[in-house]
Image (cartoon, rainbow, N blue to C red; front, side, top):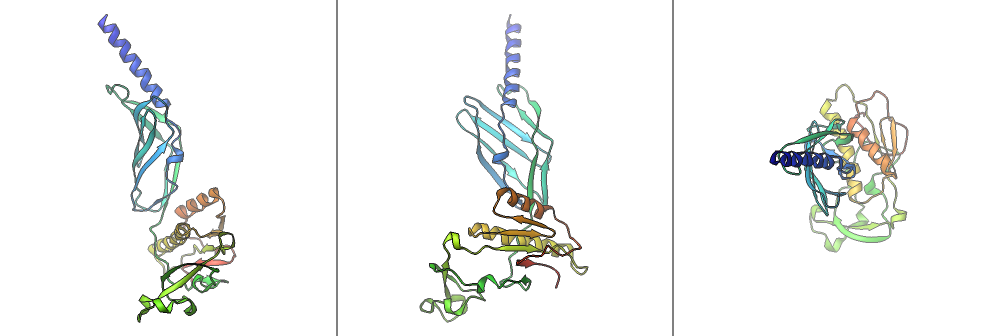
Length: 275
């Protein structure tokens, strides 16, 4: 009788464990849109939860392991993601592992989920004035809007008329510049063109630095909430008004290789290794 009761408990626990694994919600919305090479990302995101379910499930891929934990009324996905170089962190063969509900054994099942995360190059600071621009003056020399926003530090190329002389010191590093902004609907759009040609005298790290400057340009515009109209990477052009196109642009930047042809014709800020 005791053996039968114990067997029933074990079978019940196995059934409950299988139910827990199949109850795992879609974790795709909680995954990051991108990573940066060499920079670890500590992930801790809320996800959908199953009411009354208390369990932990390990989600294991080739290059990473994440933990999904449900406390009955809330759930989160956590872990550490890192990749050493630019590329695509892709995982097609995922598996779920749990020892719930009683911790006597581990149950494993495959997870039908494909993950593609662009791993972007290490950011490289842009030159104050790039020598490679086409049909466009430097952003520093473009007129500002009419709405006074703030005082900021002077940078070479700022208009002399914008310097706030009452706040200026003797050294240029102490000068302050009046910054005016446009109303959001009137802000000038910006376009980036990345020339993927790599001359024979340029090393592979020069090409990676070029891509790092492109990612610096994009991320800086996003951080400062400046509009980006389009980004051209080699022979591909992406409209940055659409989130799907933004993600496609990041994937292209993460996987791009040197090309022999010049980029598509266009107007914008161009980054190139070719003189």
